[in-house]
Length: 142
Image 1 (cartoon, rainbow, N blue to C red):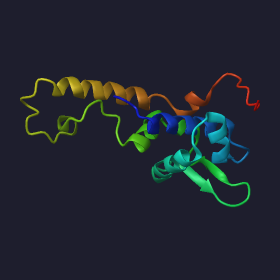
Image 2: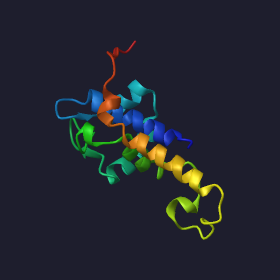
Image 3: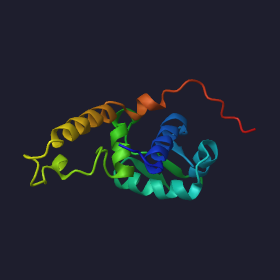
Image 4: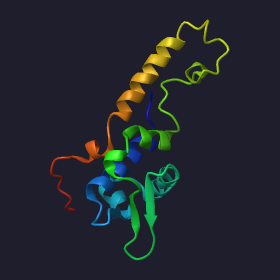
């Protein structure tokens, strides 16, 4: 499975919000863009699918920003990756979804199914809280 920049940056965005959100848990995208060196425009595109998936909420007005929609220990890395990427499947194989008419004859569908299950187990076994537990980070701007 090749995770694109959407998946990688969505994880970074969510980890940053979980780790550094204010007392209400919210944070401005501009801060994330500056600290994580990700384009603000790109982050604005990433928040849409994360909100649609019920992972983020927006807070409007002065001092607004984005906050986690659920506690960090209830959000799995797999939830974030699936919201950003659409899937965590290792290959485009209809056999993984049981929709392939050749699945019984295919010599690789069992392999891809096993790999898909291993990936799903791993990404769903890591929570956002796990990822947000980082050692002290110097947030000063030079």
